[in-house]
Amino acid sequence: MNKAVELLYDEHEIIMDAISVAKQLGKKTEQPELYEQQVFALISFFREYADKYHHFKEEEILFPEMIKANELLESGVVMEMLDNHEDFRMLIAEIETLTKEKKYTLAQDKLEEYVEALTDHIAVENEEVFEIATTLFSEKELENIYFRFKDIDYELGENNKEGLRERLNKIKKRNEVDFITSDTK
Ligand SMILES: [Fe+2]
Ligand SMILES: [Fe+2]
Image 1 (cartoon, protein in one colour):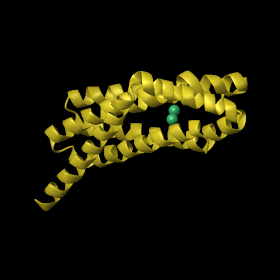
Image 2 (spheres, protein in one colour):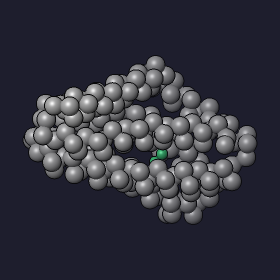
Image 3 (tube, rainbow, N blue to C red):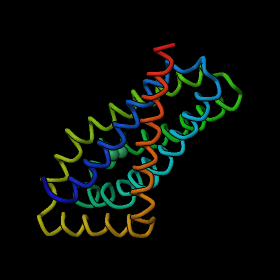
């Protein structure tokens, strides 16, 4: 795997980690305080990491380069991926509103709808989009894309990116610990 695709692929892995935490939250809708805390923490992770660091690289660099190399992609899979990103932003806003309104079961339904859609999206990118990108670009072009990705991380902050990963691990641990305590009650 080339470095450019590998970087996006690794980010997908971390996003998948957050997705598994989100799925488990369903068991917590009857613990309002904890549920709210965890859901808001996840919303901010998805906004900061998945959207800012990750989708931004695809939208600003990878997809435009792919369209430049093959304009048919603009109305094909790339358009589909961009539409998905827009839907994700709307879904996250809806989850946030429902949680603020304390409609936890509805919020969780939306959250599950969001993570299902995001899982499918990631699968299409891993299996199809990255495959196309790898065949479309030369080694040199891929290397250039990789450096532009790194520039985005640098601009948004490498430390902040790492901090988001650590925060996700804390959310994950909190989830596991609370499962243990609520299971033994
Ligand atoms: Fe994407
Ligand atoms: Fe992606």
